[in-house]
Image (cartoon, rainbow, N blue to C red; front, side):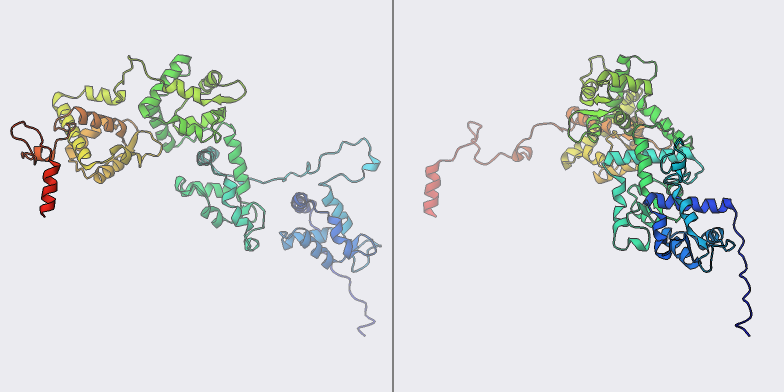
Length: 509
């Protein structure tokens, strides 16, 4: 009968290799070490007799409780590796040796059996774990990625933004556990793109590179690691810009606009050329330094000085930066930027090539004009000055609305937008004449218009030009060719009313 027939022994499951099990154990060690989980405590309820064994179902349940992200094949491999059905002490159904499993995982905290090895050198907890910490994803262009991180750090410092606060609401909301673990410093890809504060400054390829770099195994984005890498770069790590076509064009424009300083220059030449850069580009130094000085103490760090030069597109070498730090610093990393600004923005000597407020580049262009071209330019500037005065317009403020960095230059489209806003229509010949005089044709593919020099020249044309722009105001009746009322023909002056006559007229009425 079916009661007397012995049951066939279960088919033994082949044990996986030790290397495969080691990878799974390493993954579990990484998880439990971060959360300081004691593995043996999870199996105590399944082993009331303290024999160190449990059933297969209990083992799988405990493993799932320890590491919820463990896959089913990985859990099955662990079950097959720690099953001991052939041992005489192993009685079904308690055939899984969880005690060896717990000892293997606890090696991440300490080494077992130290009482028998008093002279053994013990590593620190977690030292044997090779995958401890976040593992960055591999990208094709590391230099491009470093440039992106540097730009993020500069934008965050300029705007006083803390990156981690942009995504904290996503990981702490009530519905967080549905998409990502709560308080894990991780968000989904959609949340990362939605709350990234500088989307307009980066292309889609740059965003894909950031996502690939900081994507975890479960498909989330670790924004805490992004903030950590940006902070390390911002603290003073040297970053080399990528050698792309766009970078070469930007570098060429910076070289022509900022008059790159030679590394062999002396201290006086360094200050003199910095002064020329600031005066010609009309740079506002104090505002950029005050972004790093909340308490207005007049000091900043050397790395922040380098960040200000990067924002203003002033390229100097490390030797020149050290020279400035030695001149205006205390030798301990503190830079007194107020003394530096005073030395740079002090009044120029009479031998300066630009005493009238016009940059040397614009002055040299006007010197090469013929008399006929210069006359047309002066006539056009007088017309613009007269129109601006009659309409009571602020031309310089209109240009500065498109120039947030106060570099003194705008693009071609921005120039025509400002002129349309001022209701002054330019012909093609007049526009070419203005861009021939005030345009920067050597700044790459997109020419820039030096509006600061243009506004200064228009203001001088309004003061000295024709058309009665600065003539004193006259009475309306005099301008219309009529004599004012109550005018005395004999004396040529204005007659004063007699109060008695005014009272008599009022009583008669």
